[in-house]
Image (cartoon, rainbow, N blue to C red):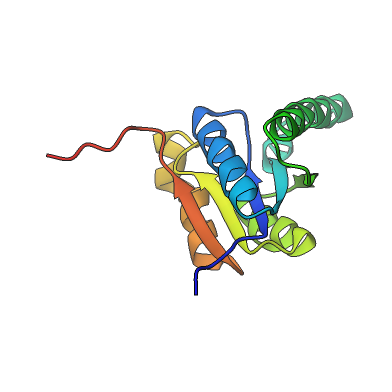
Length: 151
C-alpha cells in the first residue's frame, strides 16, 4: 500500500534550503489532501551568549518568526493547501522540531533542508537535519537545494 502523508511538518528558517523544503512540502500536502505544519525555532542558546540578556532580542526574534511563518502560510494557502498550522518553538532546533513540534502537530512526515548551519557549526554540533533523521518519531524527507549531478 502506498504511504499517504496527511500531516506534513516543515522546518523553515528563511534559508534557501528551507524554502526548497517548503515548496516540496506544499506539493506533498496537496497530493495527499494533507495538513501542513510550519515550524520556526528560535534558538535561545544564542541569547545566553549575550552578557546582558535583553528581552528586546527575544521580542525581535519572535516578531521575525511571526512574519516569516505568516508569509509561508499565506503562500501555501494561495497554492492550494487548505489546512496550515504555524508553530514557534524556543530552544535547540534539533529537539524542538523532533520532540515538541512533531508531537504537537502529530506529524507523519517531517521535511527539512539538508543544510542551514555554516560548516564550522556543523562540525562542532552536527547538523539539524542529521539529528532529525536519527530522532524523529516519523518519516523524514531531507530536501537538497542543489540540482543532482549524475555522471
